[in-house]
Length: 422
Image (cartoon, rainbow, N blue to C red; front, side):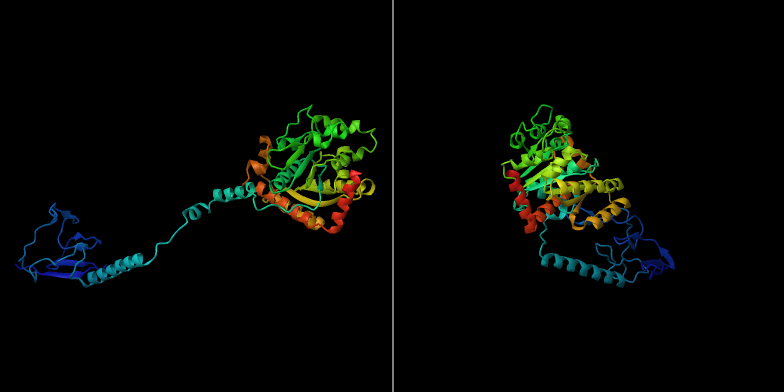
């Protein structure tokens, strides 16, 4: 009985071989098409002499089998495509075109040059923080403008915990690191500014207490700070707590610090006075000695509540003791962007004080709080942190504003310095 062999296409377009109307199962080709002949998928069997060996599972097919027009199976290429099938021919042509096009593109296109360090490193958060740290610690060629005269700035706010000492220390270090000469006077008996600058302030150490009593000059107790090349600190000890009582009977007790600063012969650009959280005699001495007042304001309601009393005391000092003192700078501190209250406080302060408020707002930062524990400012403890960058920008704003001061303000300050020296 003669078998009739025919080829047809399945529903998926695969060539199917039928014998007497029955489908004959074939093995799979490289593209998943069934090939003529049953058994397992063909493997590439190569002998040591380079000739190909037929798989052991492929059944032998007679060359002169009846029913086949040519007496043999349709030849197939190594990739498993049936050379006699039109669809296989089209697929092979597409594949050849793709391979040739990719090869030409690779050979003709120049090899791109990538800056691996920039592409893979500079876009990461760690790289960004490292870049900020480099900018803070290497200020070469990026010095802040120096003021035309000495600026004596009192940092005051009778409310505690608003960032007076933290702001004093970090602003002083930022200015000193960028070309200015700075003196910090710690007028708080707790001595926190001395701690933040790494200066010894144990009881018995020559301090501002002896300066107010007239026992030492300011230059005798000023200590160089290691954090910056041109930064000095006049430390405070616990003895300063009794200064207010001892100065009660002293003539012109409100002007003791002013005369000590005027007699300080060292050429400095900034003198920062860190005040205690009160409006006592020590704070009055600081207001009388200053040309400017910097008020740190915490972005909370209680900070606003006590601000009115501070403003009234400044007005009293202006009227009776120092008519040249003025509020020059408002610094918003401990800003928490997650709360609506912080935004409301910031808007209210800006609406009331206008341009006196610095654009830089100090955020709440763990690094800022950790730095004093190591006797450092945040700029040296973690120079890439948000707190360090913010204080750096705040110091830049202060320097630029001081350099662009009006001639009348400069003349008034120079006149006051001359009077103090006399």
